[in-house]
Image (tube, rainbow, N blue to C red; front, side, top):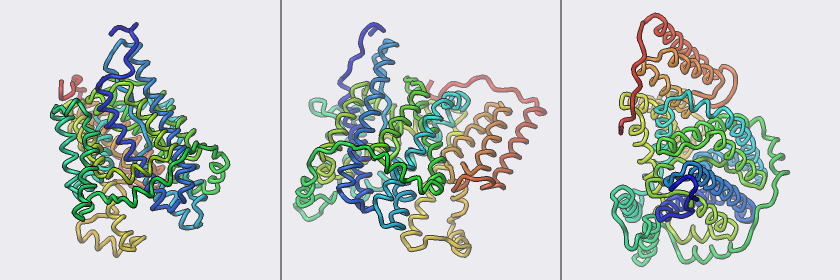
Length: 521
């Protein structure tokens, strides 16, 4: 193909990527629907009449924009292998927004509308952070080593993307393991299915067959029933998003509470998006960072102004969809699919027809791919830095597991005596809180510092240690809230490290190493 030839809007590989990415989006839409209905107790008219139509609009705007961005790159470069960036509702933010933002307000006021409004305002603030960050994202990406960006991304993918699906798969292995094998032998093993049917479609079909078939023997794998399927059809209808401007600004009454999490997670979104753009560049598609970040912010802003309390994110997984053969069409098709699902009331039918455990293995596959990319696309001598980037995210994941366990046991707060008891069992809860606080930024700065030490560029290492000190002092790292002197002793520790590295740079006489090449080269 030449630069004067129009790129193809659809290629055979788009089928695989569409079923893979489309089912990924489907899982997330089903998940957020379940959280809204069964955790927050939002009425169906709010969920299906206001929130889901706005979710569909936001996702359609983003997937179509990224399809166009890929098409434009392919047209300008003359390449036929450009793959669109995947995007969707931020997975981690679903749970943060539900459990940290909306649920406490719902419990305090007893009013689902107040809780919804707080979620809208939370996204509004984060969207502003993303748009502003879009103009500095290119610089952040330029000065930060790839091992730090991809290593941090691998930490997120292994813990928050992969672990829960893996656990759920093994809770229902008759579906989860079988569907995982169906995906792996096609996407990793090169096995082709009958008439080229996509592995994602085969996995869903087999999962549904096993789930419904198990009901004949009273096993009820997947938790599906005909009564549930019949009830799901009552939600059929046509709902379009309606402006929710007044609801967004009503949520500002909780501004003091929301800022504690909105700004740090807005920065998290910024760093995660930069990571994922870097991941796409490592796979051969270098998209403009500013346009990507601003698009995320604008689409999120439009979504929240129309009633969606969930932030948009560029997804982990571009290399996976590209490896499947995805190009431009899969992203556009996903946007059309999701808007139909959300506007026509099809989501509850999907919830009742397909077991979620049949779709979850796709998330585990993405975790495997991204985790391995952090080592394959970086120099071999940077491997220790990649491992270091994983550690804070592991701590954050473990912290969530411990706190969830304590909350389930009715222990909403932990005193010093309980801390001591947990420490006696090898659970250093306070250590997990410190290391897991602001895990993305912590992993990024630690890994970047390590890379520059390995490369013997000690002035740069000192600069990143100094940046870590500033971020820690203001609560963006190693803390639970933004403010002055949130973790002063840890900030002081980073200052000492920065001074030590600067002294080494000035007096040690060490010279930088020659540039290294990625491990796969």
